[in-house]
Length: 468
Image 1: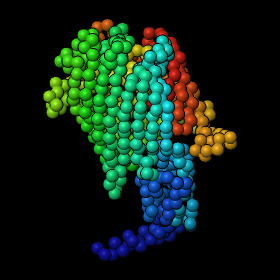
Image 2: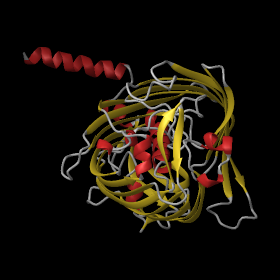
Image 3: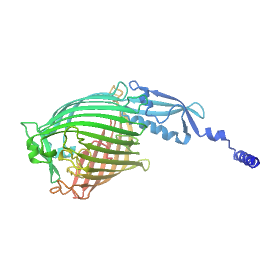
């Protein structure tokens, strides 16, 4: 058996010579070995916080064909920490094989004493119809981001106006040596002279009393995060809530809280899994995002009469079709395994869960599904404008990108409660239109959209986050 093996080895040797190949060249000529990682510009941020986001380490090998993609991914990872305005990642070659990676970062401004001035509605467009000044919030939000240079956040909120609120929040992303586990804590107290108690004709009903606070709420939340890899995260939260409403609210809707009572305290348990490979969180154009949530409200330890459970998930995908054309799509769904009192319902039309063209409507239900698609053209790819009259380096360079787009959304809300006087429940919904998006730094997005829905209603709407 030795002789045939020898002949095979000899034949393989001559074939390699004939093709002018060598095993050592095949292994080394197509790889880069990372000899050094050099970080520049991090005056506040600790170096190990930056290294945590890099998809390679010293001694790793990177294929020559992959080097561009790996460096772009490194840049995206660092920008997605929301710690930097600009990031540049460049290779420096010692020879054909050994490289050094130079990472230059420009840090953000981390201390924010921000005046609060906003409106409290399902979205800005519903407020604009009546321009009700009673629904304006004002106050002061104080936040120290990247606290101690370790990506920690500590924030205080003092708010008056429509919702009077005080709160404190603290988060630390890493509490162990391997930087895989983190903690968060939040405490808040709020009260209102007005509360929404039902939905009629697809719009929210409100009860208001200037003589008393019709809704008071205390919340305390603690969270534990596990991030074993760069792009996956598991989040576990426990939250205590004490809510009290005026008797008039219960008279208007006996199902507002559980068991026709005007107060309730309960514990909610949350589990969330996230996988995030978007290139930029604030306005992604490539990559994908997925999350899954399981929420249990009421666990029986506070003499709770609440017993509800629901799950939700969403998937978003982004493609670059050409140099300037981009396409994105998403699907989001919620399934209530056990039904909730009205207090817990936030379905289509609340916050950012809406079908474009239906911004002025609220559509509640136990189950829902929303799909969104968008085609965008980069009218202006990101440009940097330098304003020399602003002396602060963290503010005098302003990036700007402008996108023209067209979109189509659809959805469905399934409900066996509160559907008698709400024609948009239990029926297919769809809408579309055209848009222009402005994207700048500090996660600023401004969208202007002209939409038409299945009712042939048209409207011009403003939004302040990415469309998908």
